[in-house]
Length: 293
Image 1 (cartoon, helix red, strand yellow):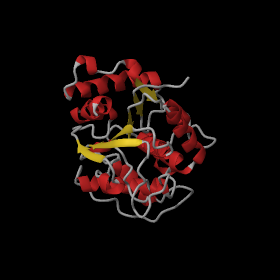
Image 2 (cartoon, rainbow, N blue to C red):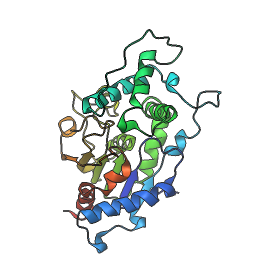
Image 3 (cartoon, rainbow, N blue to C red):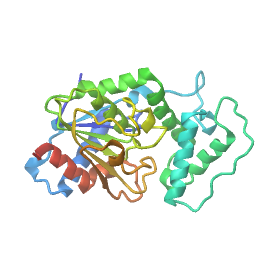
């Protein structure tokens, strides 16, 4: 059964144990709270049937080390994209000055089919930063592998984007996408004909991360400029200044067009979806998408 609604929401990484109904309980309430903060009247608030959740987390459920039951740890970080993401996040964490620590010192590495020990040390260091508090090695590495699966495995990419494509309807006014979901939303909307004019709202988006994300997008950027999705009328990109995943806060210089970069404060929950949704700025963007001219 396909979902549909005036507002389509698509989640980010780490939701493999969740589901459409589970996420809907949080996202619908948080989204309406954000609209209330933005001054919405009761009659303007969307009903549950107006807000649909596009879910793809099940595609990543149960993926552990091949042929083993043990959970992921930092020794399972692969060289290439996964290791480079760890280095990028660590650099962003240091730049944000979340903690007064120095980068882990390089050591002689034993590849062993995984990332160098230097990268493993960076990953362990990341877990001591406030931004990553609450994550375990298993969750951190598992999330890395979800990002890699989407960007590297074409079958995974196809399955995920097809779920959003099937849910888009003529009545859809905006797509609200968090984290990895913003990549899914962007690539899906780029495939649509220009007759559809949606509003795209990205929350904590990593779309601007050079080399690792931005330069791997489909369609590929042209001369350093991302392709504007023809089916998108306006795009509002919302980030917390301390959101390390959204390390490139300004997407307008990269994609141009009718893109507005907006800053919010999520306090200690810089990358969490719910505080992004309850923000007045997010509510205002949704109200404009539903009732603006």
